Amino acid sequence: PAFHRIFRKGQVLYGSRRTYLKKVAIADFDGITANTTFVCETKDQNLFMQELLPFLMLTDSFTEHSILESKGSTNPYINWPDIAKYEFPLPPLDEQKRISQILWTADEAFNQHQQSSKNLMSVKRTLLNRLTVRGIEQHTNKHTRLGRIPSHWGLAKVEDVTSICQYGLTIPLNESGQYPILRMMNYDDGRIIANDLKYVDLIDTDFKSFKVHKGDILFNRTNSADLVGKVGIFELEGDYVFASYLVRLRADRNQILPDYLNYYLNSDLGQRRLLAYATPGVSQTNISAGNLKKVLVPLPPMDEQKQIVDILNNVELRKHLQRDHVAEAKKCLRALMNNLVRTTRDE
Image 1 (tube, rainbow, N blue to C red):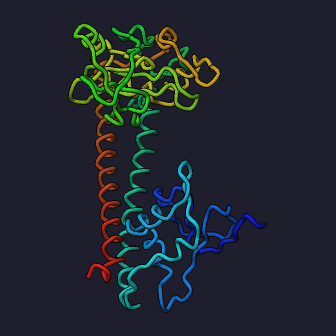
Image 2: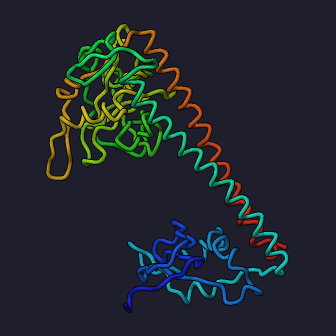
């Protein structure tokens, strides 16, 4: 068809729209792509190695060129003639081979770190689902409204194990102000993060009423169907408040550990129990604070909760360390691409 392109295994695919996203990939199968993707291959392997082409197209210099030459504002795109005129230094073939070997080694290291990070996420999810419902050791079980849980565990509702269940602030948000306000985009795998913050100005009494304390759990009560029900525990330093579409839970620490409650509400079972109360709207789904209070929670003895939390916190720590390794490997690969592919020009 006129508006599609055939590609072969080993060719490089380049997304021609929003080129700042650096959409570059090597095809590992034959196929057909839409005309918004360019199919690229070097003319002569004895002049420029195909193995270096994707790295060249991922350099900052190439991306700057593609952004500068792009047309349109809302959905910018670049034409092939504008890509084709990009100039770059061309090292001798033996130097290209050495550069290629270094870059592919760095790329493999980056991919291994990424895979390790995915494996840790999988381990965490498996442990999260098992430990918060079945416990650490083998126990006799009992049937409950929540399903089978260890016979020595209790069963409670969220309202039984929390001292606060509170809607957030309804107030205009600003780019600057006294206090950062947490919103639905401040979740990251069960944790609250200081990401893309907005700010509000408050009188002292309002600030005291809506200040988030360490160990508070924030529940995303309204959003699209695939995002509603997100839960995260707050452990940040500093003064924060929270927006109206979040609900703040504060665990009764005499009965339940905040970390354990947060882990359970993030488990598959906890999420199913939450979403059972979701009511769809025209564009958003909602779970009220009243229904949130009704969600059933398995309640191990306090010492067992501590053991479960210790195990999951250890995996969480390893996950964050591995995430740092991924970021460093990506940074290293980018630096190598930008330096090695354009060394000749810099000289």
